[in-house]
Amino acid sequence: MNTKPNPEAIPHLFFLTDATSTKSGKPVQPRLSGTITTLLGLNSTRQQEPPNSFTTALIKAFIKIAFILEPLMPFFATYFLNRQFRSWEKNNLILNHKIRITRTQSFCYDVDIHLVVSTQQIGHIIIESAKSIIKLLVKTAES
Image (cartoon, rainbow, N blue to C red):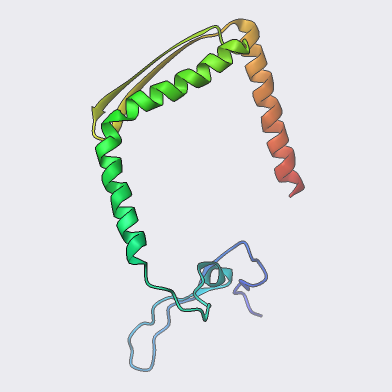
C-alpha cells in the first residue's frame, strides 16, 4: 500500500519529494511537486524575458524618491488620518480625536492616537465588528 500522499489529489497543499541519492552517491536536491510548480511557472515552456532597462531605471528612481521623501511621511500620514477621523466625527462614530506622529529614526515612527468615544458609540462599534466577523465566518464556512 502506498502511504505517500498524492499532491495532485490535494491541490491546496504542496509537497517536497524525498531527497534520494544517485548512483554516484551524491544526494539529489529535493524537487517541488504538485501544483506549486505550476503556480510558480516552473513547468512553463515560455521563456522569461530579461528585465527592460527602462523598467529597472524606473524602479531605481522610485527607490531614490522614497528615500528622499521618507522624512515627510509623518506629515502625510497625519493629514490622511485626520481626514478619516474628521469624517468619522461628522458621522458621529467618535466624539473627538488627536493624532501625533513623530519620526524616531529612518523608517521608524511613534504614532499616538487619542480617541474620545461615548458608550453608545462603543456599543455600535462592537456590534458592527461582531457582524463583520460573523459574515467572515459564514463566508469561510460556505467555502
